[in-house]
Length: 416
Image (cartoon, rainbow, N blue to C red; front, top):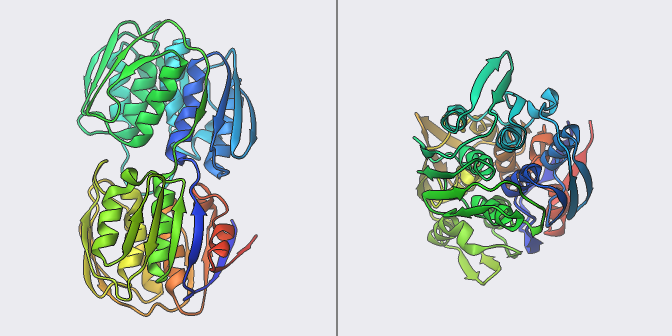
């Protein structure tokens, strides 16, 4: 685990190019397991979650070459048992279950790990596979699933789970007959996976809507593909400009993917120039308070909630944020309070009183997005703040300290 040393109260400015979406590329890499041949992925970020997934795929028999931002995957024969230590390190690894079950008829996958941000039950994934004809057993820390060949099914989710939508959609591409997913998640990353699979020869329609229909095919090939920009990374850097009273430009961004954030930031007084693939921001002299509730897409993303709490410490008035997706996502607020933040908690919500003159301290990042919130708060705080545990931040942000330096921040990485 390394640490960041951040000298705060420097106004950021300049341009930052947004990398490919973490929550898309990890699933695209897994989707390649369904095909045959050599795949080329462009706009792939150099983050530790990508490196972890490379380890998973190599253990399954995939040849991987990666020099960011380009990745090449060569898929021929694969095997169905995943390396437990890698799967436990990253929740997205559970996504290998659908492709391997569909392709091989069996899969053994360790129960996944990832950020400790609350309950993230897998029953929606497992129930979907069972409705498609799979038998699933839990053997200690491992799920064992079997199905000679999956069959199509009409599946209604009790909640629009992103991971379950992706997992069942991928499995259904090689199932016999038609699969319909109702109350499907609608995130842009799911549209990306649909487009990727269809270029491989799948027959999927409806991604981005609550109903996705998949007509199973016998086999899939390979394709070349460019990953969409990361909307959460885009939002994080937009808020870095805002919390420091700066101005700058996000390049390689799809504005409609961050529509709720743009509306909120404008409501706080910022001036935005929104172009086709770029967003310019000019921060106001005085930030207005706000209220928000996280919700599945197209609502306000839970992955930007911690960063918004950090920004709320600098707003003039009382802001309220409700977390409606994960039940334990406010753990990072204890670290913000070490800087002097005035935050009241009430069930699944926090009330932030601002503006607060934050003062430097030593903080510990406990998860990916909470870690990003600590970085934003440190940028606004007086003095030199140390953030430990930045390996969590590296899971989703490529060279964050280098990119912030280019925008005028004072950030130094120290390896432990």
